[in-house]
Amino acid sequence: MNVRITGTGSSLPGKILTNAELEQLIDTTDEWITTRTGIKERRIAADGEYTSTFAAEAGRRALEMAGVQPEEIDLIILSTVTPDFPFPSTACIVQDLLGAKNATAFDISAACAGFIYGLSVAEKYLRTGAAKKILVIGSETLSRIVDWKDRNTCVLFGDGAGAVVLEASEGDHSLLSTHTFSNGSYWNLLYQPGSGSRNPASASRTIDERLIYVTMEGNEVFKHAVRSMEEAAVKALDANGLSQSDISLLIPHQANRRIIDATAKRLGVGSDRLFINLHRYGNTSSASIPIALDEANHQEILKHGGKILLVAFGGGFAYGSALVEW
Ligand code: ACO
Image (tube, rainbow, N blue to C red; front, side, top):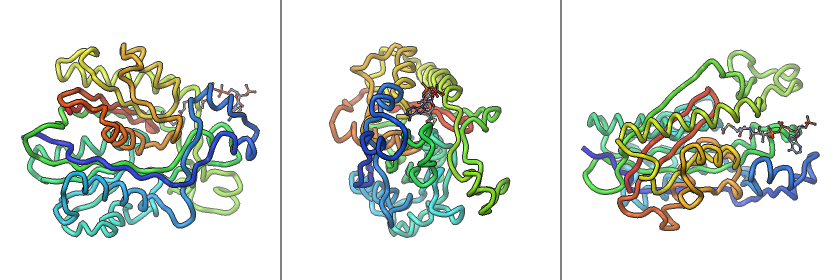
């Protein structure tokens, strides 16, 4: 049985935060951010907007494109590092918002690789017949966990969500493979120290010591990101008996322009086969690939029968790839 992507959707906050505006908030420049990251602006959630808000809207749009009713969905898998609450899962809140009353719903946590992990889990449910129609969503409100006083990190991230509907049926838009990898030796190079069971909420500790915010060894993460994304991409190509020249579009996780360019160069993929929207949204973690996929879909640059390679890397470290024949 084929596993097909029958709908894509995305949802982004209306509020845009430009590099010029960041210059007013912290000691940075548009020139530094642009040359080091490629980011020009990012979207920021307004009061009253949460991870579930964007997730539900992206999901609704993906369902609409697929022509699938919410009640037909068997499973909702939502990837996020910024859930509405520690529990219940944001997926359950989205289930309620969508009226997907026949679905099982759960969250997964694999940072920026979360959407690929979600695809991989969904693929197994569909291939084993355990589900027929699945909604996979990546949604983040990273603006709520970055330290707006830390110029090393706050310039990098943005909010938003992307989603796909996956169905077990014959036809085009087939998910050919997914591969996931983890390397827990480096968990402390990119993480949020406070708010979990090691450092529970406390005014004197997690707040005063700023443990509630994302912390990152940027240079180290950079090196691992390039190597690991190449490894995951090569695994996808090998598993499908393909070479880089067979790829019609590479959609990498949108973290940093230099990471994307270095990965594409190692793979031998030129800019004409590379999808980038990082300049408009920054790093939206697990939402970045489904947002990019949805934009590429609407821009009609996904050609029928073309091979699309999705590849992601993030905290954990967790990384992975997926290959889709459109
Ligand atoms: N504006 C101006 N100066 C800054 C800023 C800023 N926003 N941030 C840092 N600097 C300064 C630093 O303080 C440092 O100054 P110093 O030399 O006086 O100490 C200088 O710029 C250079 O800092 P580096 O950290 O060496 O800069 P680098 O070129 O490595 O770029 C960056 C930093 C952009 C974070 C890069 O390492 C990177 O992209 N790493 C990957 C991390 C990433 O993308 N993480 C996202 C999550 S993981 C993922 O999604 C893959």
